[in-house]
Amino acid sequence: MKSFIAVEGLDGCGKTTLTKMLANELKGLYLSTPPAVLKANGLRKKVDAEGSVQTRLFYYLLGNLLVSDEIKRMREFFPVVCDRYIHSTLSSFSTMVQAIGLDTNALGLEKPDITFFLLMSDEEERIERIRVRGRRTLNDVKQEDLDFRRQYLDYYQRNSAEFTFVDTSHETPAESLRKMKDELSRRGLLVPMILNT
Image (cartoon, rainbow, N blue to C red; front, side, top):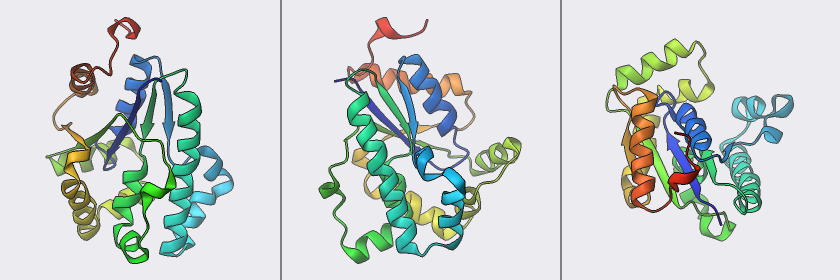
């Protein structure tokens, strides 16, 4: 069974760039949630714009279930690195999850060997990265809301034992990737022979 690594974090922290770089370094598979099948024909935009909180929660849970099934199949052959996974859903909908008493352990999701949470101690730099990117997603707009961002980050702090935190502020992607690879190596999840040199 090959490694399964999840990468979480606010938009603008370098998450997608680093997830793709890490998958490439491991000669592994890059996945993201929600999967493409749930974004087809503008479905994600419609759910985000028009769906109730419950609809949005179950849409993103379905995305995690579909990706989990693919991870279970693919990690037989390749390391898998996933851009956002169950914790993104739980942190964004924590109030609803508590209100309905959802036990996500009962979902049978594939468990990561390690979950990185990329953070930026410099909020101005994170916002500037989003501006330079040239497009603002619905997530960007949501994460600009101070209450949402506080709830999101509070979730990760409350569950901090489940994450390996990496501050990407004032670093190049290569510098942040090196920190992630060092941690994987320390945990025996990195096999040097398969890395690009």
